[in-house]
Amino acid sequence: MLKVLVTGFEPFNGYAENSSWTVAEKVAASNIDGVTIVAERLPVSFRRVGAYISDAVAKYNPDIVIMLGQSAGIDYIKLERIAINMMDSINADNDNFVPNEEPINKETPAALFTNFPIKQVYRCILDKGYPVKISNSAGLYVCNCLYYAMLMLCNEHPPVKALFVHLPCYTGQYNLKEGTLTMPLEIMVETVKIVIEEGDNI
Image 1 (cartoon, rainbow, N blue to C red):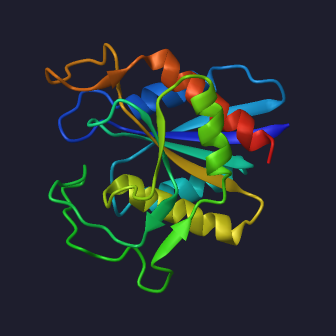
Image 2: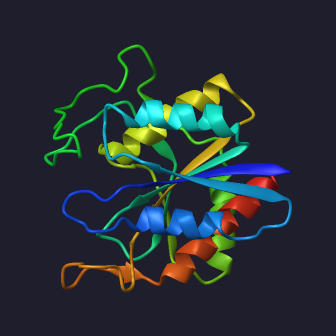
């Protein structure tokens, strides 16, 4: 039985909801033959998110970790290839911390690459007719910080595969600003299920 951990984030930066957590919960409630899926909600915290993902991996011992994050300026699925060893933001996290070009860890590599078959996943999503892009920058906010921490864990536990996926806000999401780009929730859920199914084929 394949074990998959799907993570999403708590609300942040004035948003009443976080699409990543809504999608993570719905994916965890889905049925995929031969797959056990669990979901964990993570804090939008530079300093705490690494410990949270480490604890979750120790708790569930997953084969695959799919991390989801909300990106309010897009209307497509964004598959992240790289995590960078830096924290930088003009916006505070939920602990009111604002990093200024600080390394996540001074002793570790400048960047880490996903060990997931990202082009294979991209083609499968595209074949379904869903809008998707491969990205070479997950930004420098908490999403990137989480991704970097998880890819370090992958280096320590080589069988574990991990991918970060940025999602738009979902259509009908509560209290969005007028003009915010969105995507139907069911498309995002189906997309993450495709990611899981392709990960099962590794």
